[in-house]
Image 1 (cartoon, rainbow, N blue to C red):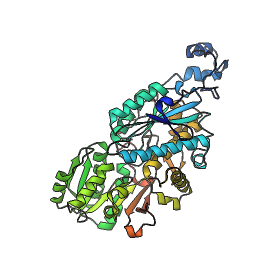
Image 2 (cartoon, rainbow, N blue to C red):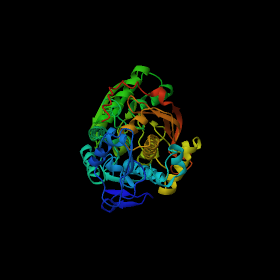
Image 3 (cartoon, rainbow, N blue to C red):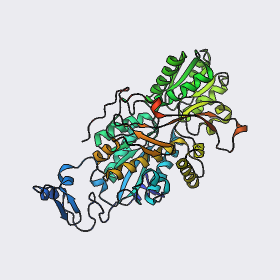
Length: 477
């Protein structure tokens, strides 16, 4: 496990110093000398309704803090020092490792920008001031390998050792769902990274979880109209589906739209385990299915391998490849000869810098630090953390129910591509979705110019009703 200091420099987990120092706000506890116990504070506050207590090492503490906000999750312990910790359980090995590493860079950059008052962070979270509520922010990370149990164990370690106040990381929606449930149980806030399952803010939604990114239903409703306009109605399609919540829900949404709106027929749906290396048995069935379109819902390295093997089988370009939920680095890894002409629904593409000033700030800052233009995993990570910083600073508190209720106001807030808002009913961000099409090599302006943005769809137009997928958020305390 590792951590990052306020300037984004990597530190070993063991070397991350315990937070301390003089308090600067009502949620802080003193550094020097003995501190009164929380029980003594509560006792002192008894019978002093509306009073303000002056206690050595703690400063002024209102009775509301002492009595009306009992300890919950890692609060207040997690915000008593001069540094607050947030933790990412992200795949750095396995089939989603490339995408996980990109996400981690986005979180690193966001933390650095919080602690240094970067112009971009101030545009999204204007009350950030060299940190959040007088605290520096530090990022811890661990490899989840896209395994739910491993991700939960890592976050539990961070809770025990550093009293983290925010969890993030997923890439696999199976991890996102597991961490959703863990966050609700532990009463610690959680923002998924990449999570394409409808269930994350659907039947598996929780009060303590908020998702910034798009997902299967939004992707299907964005890419579907362009497929019908380009290729017409009554076509035959074969799906390749990873066998977990992201795959099943994204295939279901894509299939439903094209069937109901355009009369498209699914002739086969080949379901494979995450991490499959050899797709020959699935591709044989697809080759013999009579399909005209290969709808590849696989993700990460699985999407790359299955598409490359489909070309080796002669399925591509005989069939038209579609990526309903775009994979960061797909074109670079699979090859432009495969991605050329492919339609995909995505959350972000770097050429949006030509239209949106905040996207330009992000792309330039990211490229300067890491040497390449960011993919949408890094964008999702950065914006998620920036939105968290905004909610905490607007609430003026790290107390989780206060932050949650600030989020649930549903106010319009900035993103890299215009204004967005979060729905209080399911904690899903309503944000645009972009449809891209793969460029031919001759049309690329530089070595990273893989996709052309061909459509931008309003989130309000492609998102389901808040209760459509069975969301019941749960309690605050």
